[in-house]
Image (cartoon, rainbow, N blue to C red; front, side, top):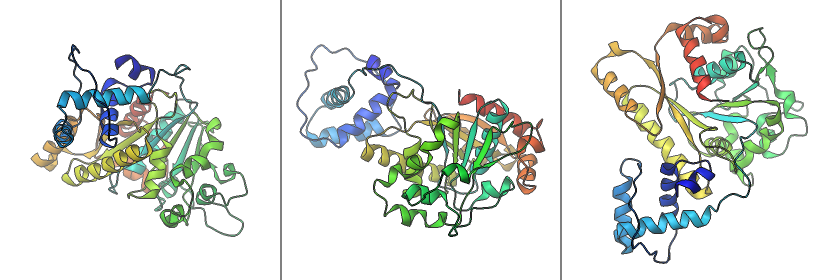
Length: 358
């Protein structure tokens, strides 16, 4: 199991979790011989062992037999690949949280700037219908008119032009013409409705962005603050592709040290799990960012931060203080690394860019 998981770019914890989720949806499995098998262990998400044992009881099999069936099913569905694992040409990162106002735009923009500063070719996609990223970088939304195409038109297949014509470049010697933005558009609020009419809608964003992938090292998507088809397409886009190494592309979630963020995270995680289960795909969680943290706000804030930091999957990549530079840069419509390049906020973004290991 460990060897096969490695061959598919997964650690054994992810493989075991995937195996159990597949087992839940598969009936009529034959009995697996377990005599003489050696014991082994791995971590599962909180509450998962209890749930698994309960389903084993419902099916009338022992816990060991249920686990053996799950692992055998996974091994049968994941034969040794005929080709070695290779890194995909572009890293794809979705910055997502169902809750608004937690710093998705701040984080997306800051990481993209730091990556471009370090020499990488970066595309920022403003996938939030509210268009905060576009405005905070000093650009205008794309206005849907007869002679102007939008990202949605490239997603539903009605566009006739090149999607590259929608891109704008962030000027400045620091970014060296390596940082581009796909702005928001005024038809984005209709995206959920429009996607419901698109065949295989989950892959709509991938079909739209595919022509751009060879032009960039990293594509960062500033996700929508809602659940639905709009989010499904973004999650599907950053899934682990065939032959792709684990934890290269995936999801980063900014949160606050409060209860509301914990609830929002559970909703997003539930949507991810449902999409992965139904689509038989794997989306890697790259990590959490505790944003706008201020210990002076009291014991509950500290307790919530500590609760986030206890999470091993996904792990906390950084705790960002509630500092003024990020707000001032956004209000002034100036990129953070140009407004305050020596600030603590800017340095955190550079550290996070290194975490992406491009």
